[in-house]
View 1 (cartoon, rainbow, N blue to C red):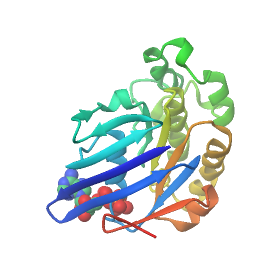
View 2: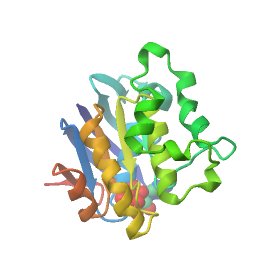
View 3: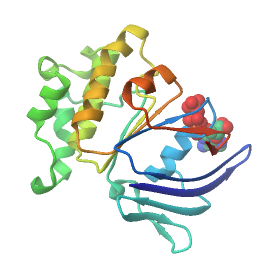
Length: 212
Ligand SMILES: Nc1ncnc2c1ncn2[C@@H]1O[C@H](COP(=O)(O)OP(=O)(O)OP(=O)(O)O)[C@@H](O)[C@H]1O
């Protein structure tokens, strides 16, 4: 369960949201500039609200009044962005293994092998990141994020930079992660078609406010 009560004012924009997400997968949908990424950043700890409270799986990660503001890494939230942000100096396998170094073995939710099989990336393991297509990069980025054993997975327009044919190749993998992986997921997109393939549970945001 994710609870967000947050106000954040910028020059030409105000985020003012109050929402409780209790489904396994939630999509956040809204037009460009409506505040989707800002909301995600507030949950992740990248942006600090002026007021409010954020609770992730029972843990208060932000509370303005109580002066709680857990740093990003302590929130244990996995983020996947439009650009894969892989480490260019590491090959695919080492990108995937990277987060495992920081998590004690008993806290690791997945083995490398499970994720490699789930995302069908075995043939890519020895490649450098420059030898991957955009869609392959996104699968590796998703795998690396899962291997960080997050307690919440947030994807911010993960398909936005891919062409239509690559999108349709990656969507089944996102669906598989949504259906088979036991981690709550927030999926941000401005594409209704894309969202409908992932979940029926949609939160609409417009001009910084949740719309019923
Ligand atoms: N760092 C910032 N400083 C000032 N204004 C910002 C900053 N980041 C975003 N904004 C503004 O806040 C508003 C919400 O932006 P946000 O990125 O959350 O929207 P979005 O719904 O994710 O849009 P998109 O679908 O285009 O990515 C926009 O008006 C944007 O211009």
